[in-house]
Image (cartoon, rainbow, N blue to C red):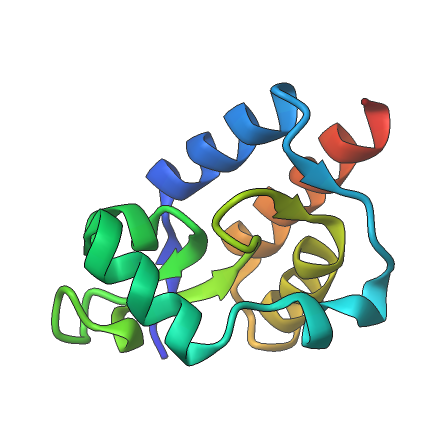
Length: 115
């Protein structure tokens, strides 16, 4: 995957954090807190794919635009930023050499933890 930082999503995440829309959960909670595929489809149907993409720090321009495969590294449940999701995506981004996404996640964690 040729994931690049989705700057619109980063801005969206920062705004949510600044407004207190944060779930301060722990690292391993994301597997339980992550939206299901059905939840994702309902969100896309209601809000559109562009809004869905704003919940993902990664984008892949090599994938077909408007498909779930074109976005990666989710950070929330369509209501709040989840600390556990940011921790998880930081780790995955680092493992796969996506330094810009890793660095953005680190900054989001710092912002979450400073609030």
